[in-house]
Image (cartoon, rainbow, N blue to C red; front, side, top):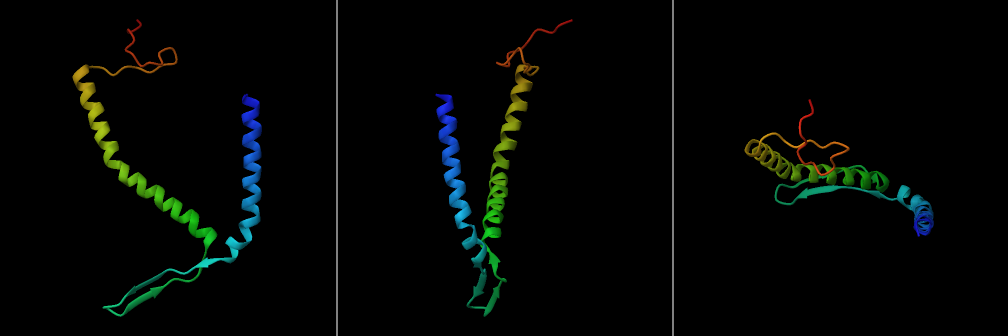
Length: 109
């Protein structure tokens, strides 16, 4: 069954790579121009044409940074909660290869 999954995965990836390969020339030829205009102030700006192939990864990276910033609050809140729980319950449990559950191990000495 695992071999069938690998073969199916490889076939799907080959089909997707062929589709991407066939569509690269239009992406290289297409370009986007960003415009910014404020009617009341009679202010407008326009960028030089940028190829789409550069815009897509750029916006992907911008989205990743945005999601990281959004999750910073949750990250700090969870860190504070873990520190508070460690203070309340004593020494944190140790995760080791022989202890995957993370339960407290007796000190060896």
